[in-house]
Length: 425
Ligand code: AMP
Ligand code: GLY
Figure 1: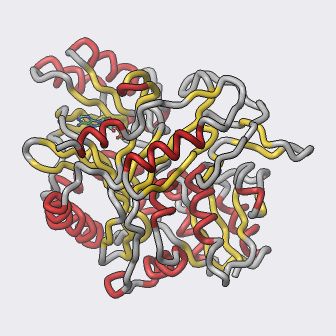
Figure 2 (figure 1 turned 90 degrees about the vertical axis):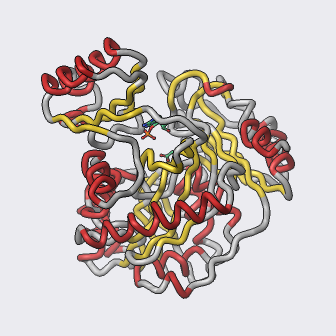
């Protein structure tokens, strides 16, 4: 069976590697793919992930039987609808269901209507009304979010009224995040440990995967700018069995029921970004896809066959499927280009060294014509190691990361430290 993966990052590399373990899988095509995927997939760099009509024609011409649009923009643009209409089975939400990530106004209103715990908020369609609201608003910091997809950058935490008003102007008037700023959500600032829970969904049932902890800031001690994610550990020690049970009852099942009631049952991977506040777990954000780099951290822990689970998400029957996980810990360290998440250079050759047992997923790399692998993005590589305990996993990931060199490379030195502290008695 031929498979198509849409996307170019470490997440897509990890999904491809997991699917490749199934003996029924023949060729894996990746649109556009990257330098690491090129070692075992047919990459199609001339197509962009959002060229849906062209991707459909490519898939039909190459006898693709199963597709995984893994990135947010093709999903929000309707990749699943386009491919399914052409008879190609997909893992992922329909365009209607992908609105859970594609529109923050949709997801906030969904949570309010169906009593799913989240931060209190207000929605504005015009900057004048948002500015007037802030004139009366007294509790700072406050959080401002552009409605649509903004490459993970559409969230601003304002420390005072002036910063909040500047943020409204930036998002709604200067359109800093493009069309995604035509509506804005202004919401209450919450505090507490953050947890990512990815889940497999078949429209009816939501099966959580191992919970993880992302590290979103660029620098150690959670300093520097927000990024797509600089490292992850799993399981997340803050996410106790009691909290998990509460989330299942108060958040996961109600979200699936809400999407069904809206006529948009959610199939695929639903990402719950949670904050464990003193008043209980709250949803910070939903994503309609695997997290990156959460995916790279968690899939190596999956013992069951990924293709079987993905097919069950599409066809139903997740409730009756046993999904097995390794009883291990995983740590992912992201090697990034100097300057990321702002300006950075590309095209630097990568020297891999001896990374031992660790897994090295490529996130932003390209295979040159002469065969050399060079940097091609901000987040370049994801080094993932497993261990019997969290400390072993963290140490193994850093040992391997230390073997890899390229010009201006940097990585955080404290991935997993907060999790290790949380484990102390
Ligand atoms: P997002 O782009 O939605 O993932 O948000 C980026 C980050 O902003 C989150 O990981 C949180 O750390 C933070 N954040 C978002 N919403 C809130 C909130 N209501 N209160 C506190 N922090 C928030
Ligand atoms: N790592 C955060 C995300 O994928 O959105």
